[in-house]
Amino acid sequence: MSSKRKCCVCGNSYEYCGHCDKQASNNTWKLNYCSENCREIFRICSKFEGKLISIEEAKEGLSKLYIGKDIQKSVADTVRKIMEYKSSVVETVEESIEQPIEEIKPKRSRRRRNKSIE
Image 1 (spheres, one colour):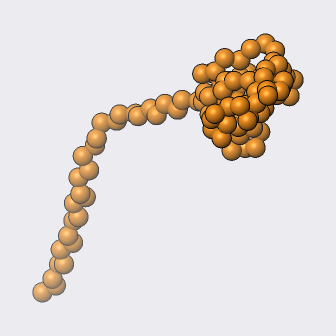
Image 2 (cartoon, one colour):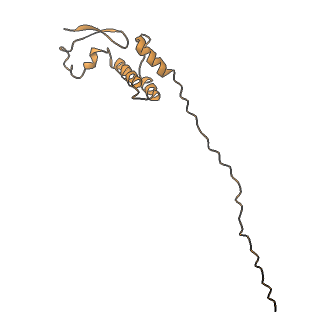
Image 3 (tube, one colour):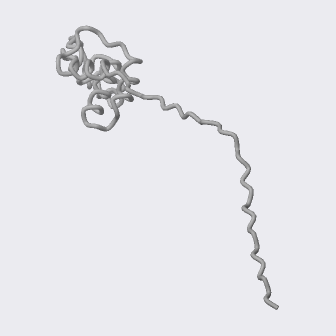
């Protein structure tokens, strides 16, 4: 007997029964999410908010998923924060100044001659 559920990410209504599903042990995520896409969106946002992944990793993960307009406000705020992030990677350029190599010659020392007094 399936029950009506509401996805915690997109708000869509769907039906799921853990007793009827033959693979219920593998699909426990269906208790909260209508699709694997919504599950993955929530997983990435949770990891980001828990500081388990960086904003760059979160943005890379979310960019591979479909993000609809109807996602719940709490999730939408996190998704917006992640997707609006602009990487501030500054490329450093190392300049080398080539100068001619000067040959260093050893200084000649002058020996003083001792004048012998005879």
